[in-house]
Length: 74
Image (tube, rainbow, N blue to C red):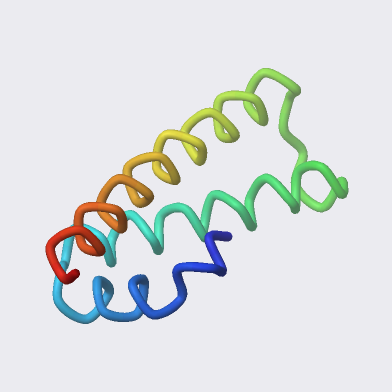
């Protein structure tokens, strides 16, 4: 996820508690979705879709924060 921004992600995780929290929340959701899709955790299709949408919202928020960080540090 967002591998091309590895340096920015590292910096933000160390300096921004909100970014660190949503980064961890996204990773946890990613694992839960994977577990559900692979059949390790029984969830309905609706539950999986809700989780995927939440992941996308978190990713969008992180990307905005990354872009703001890059702009501020140019």
